[in-house]
Amino acid sequence: MKKFETKAIHVGVQKDKSYNSVITPIYPTSTFFFDELGVNKGYDYTRSHNPTRAALEENLAALEGGERAWATATGMAAETTLLFLLKNGDHLIAGHDIYGGTYRLFANIVPRMGIEVSFIDMRHPENVKKAIRPNTRAIWIETPSNPLLNIVDIEAIVTLAKNKKILTIADNTYMSPYFQRPFESGVDIVLHSTTKYINGHSDVVGGVVIVNKDRGDLGDRINYLFNALGTACSPFDAWLVLRGVKTLPQRMEAHQRGALKVAQFLQDHPSVKKVYYSGLPSHPQRELIKKQMKGFGGMLAFEIDSKKVDICHFFKKLQYFSLAESLGGVESLIEQPWGMSHASMTETARREAGLSPELIRVSVGIENPEDLIEDLKNGLKS
Image 1 (cartoon, helix red, strand yellow):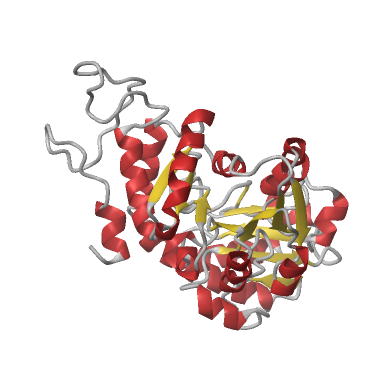
Image 2 (cartoon, helix red, strand yellow; image 1 turned 180 degrees about the vertical axis):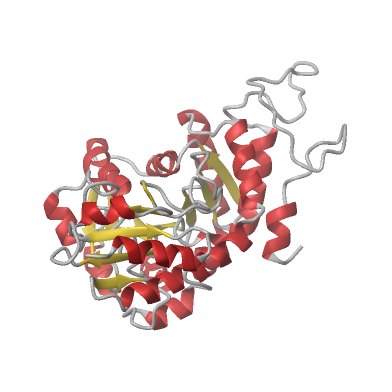
């Protein structure tokens, strides 16, 4: 089985040998009985292992091109699990323009564990090189960044890290494995908030951790943490994500088509100061995008001219864009990072990351782009 679309539908699915269910059954049991002492059917307790969750994990590992996967309760649960690979006295490098929830975790919680964190502009590999210390144990890569879609040169960062035996972790939520596969550039671990594109229907929260085939040594460590910390997702949530992932390729293509048309409309609008979208020729990292991404995705951001359009008035006039956090669903969502998804960052940190109250983040759904453009046009009327 080689093609992505076929893997999305078939890998890990057929777990029912009793009745030949085409769709993976939900196993909502908390525990499994043993045939006798020391003998069971491969499962003993759902926190540790569950057939429905195993199906999802097998599927996502195949799509990302990894060795093993662990499906977690949320994207933040995936991050938390991985942070326990570090210990007191270690140093972590991350981008200064990452998702606000990740920034909050790294800035406010991780230091309590005795782990130092450096937030830097990771668009330039030399910044990463300068930030590496003798105790640096991991580099956290988020590309494209949320919400400004800055691109990190994955291969360059991996090269720096391998020379120093530093762990590389890539958050691939924005692109999904359909448009970007960091393992092909040598990353050790990939994670996703499956809440977003992988599930795609805004009806479940979840996450996943996937380990590179070349880093099998990490598998047992992650598996131990996953079980000990209890970060697993429920069978019901695993089933929903497994259902959603079947249409991931088709949805990503639709998201991208719509996002490109919306971005092109916005960049020509007199009430818009700047548009951030990796599919526009104006993106300053165009060549790097072509090198490591197979597409541009459905996320974009733009700066509204507040002298021409009141931002609150703009949001209120929208009909098809819901003012809401999160992203990656079939419906279009829109938000102000300054006061919503990135509000937990200090004002100084937000400004250093390039955010402003005028910045608007858009998750373009799979509606007809013409309707979305008409909606935005109406909202941007002064």
